[in-house]
Length: 127
Image (cartoon, rainbow, N blue to C red; front, side, top):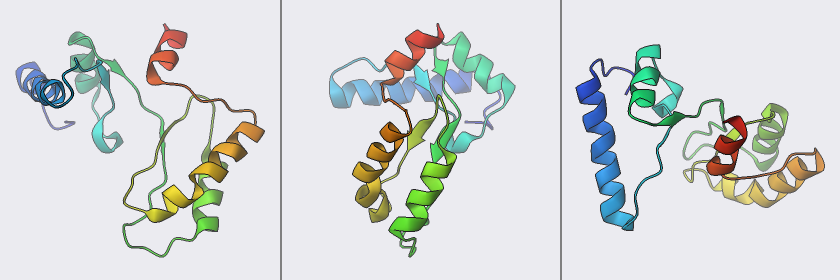
C-alpha cells in the first residue's frame, strides 16, 4: 500500500477489499485502515482519510518467526515490556506461542492497569 502513489489505485485496492469483505460476511466493512507491515507514506495516510478511513498505527506486534523456537517466557517478556497506553496488539496465529500465552498475557496486562476495547471504542475516545 505504501508504494501506491495515486488516489485512484489506492481507492481501487481498498474498494476491492471492502467488496470481498461484504461478499464474505454480508456486512459493510468498517472504515479502519492499518498500514500493512506498518509501512506508509503521508500521502497514503491522506488518501485513506480522503476515502473516509480512520488510520490506526502504533501496533504492538510480537514478531516471532513461524516455526521458530521462541519460548513462552521470551514472548511473554517481549510483550509485557512493550505494552503502552493506546497500544493495538496484533498477535498472528503463525506462532503457537502466541496462543499459549494469551490468557496469561491478558491477565498480566489487567494487573498492570490496562483495559481492553474495540477499535470502535478507541475511535470514539479519540474523536
